[in-house]
Length: 248
Image 1 (tube, rainbow, N blue to C red):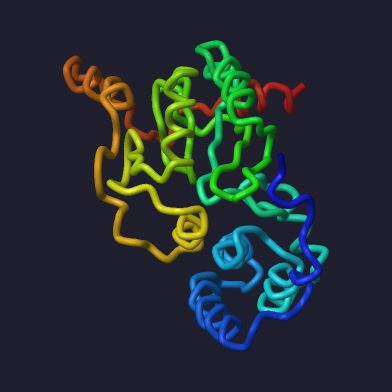
Image 2: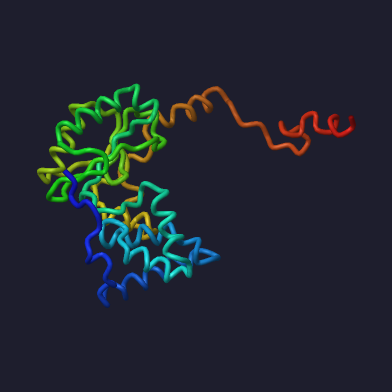
């Protein structure tokens, strides 16, 4: 079942003064990172999402106002990127990769069994807002397929049984640790704030890169493989035959 079908009417109201003051302070810091204000839209959306758990109409209006663009322009970006949610998700947003490699390694089966186990479909959340599910596309961790993510932290080499146990632990409040990355799994809003560019000090905790990801580098070192040096004389593929064609 879905936690909320659509944004509530309260989402249309302006932010409370103390909330707006805090958001404006953070927005000023974000905008200062970029040569043009509108370039700050992506982290700004993560900022307003960190406040309410999804991008509400008032969050959209706030971003437009701060960046000097229209609400329609903001909405166009929100609806393009799946990391931005237009309705509430769970405190722990669980993604199952169903892209090609993960799918053939068991991702489709994981999704089917996990969806049946939880009673949740794509982008649906528990009634209590604890857990939500999403089918996700490739997150560049194919060497650990099939992969799941919780609030964008990796859970590697998953099975249907491990996936169901993971969600059961999240629902019951047990401590859950990702396969790589920080030593603590933060909530959805906290993760959104990190994506807005406000580090929580956990970036260098835990395992940073697994053995599978490093194997190619190790093999290159063992065999003395190196990339060819850059050369101004090397013919570029798109230039081959170009002069001949012009001379004809």
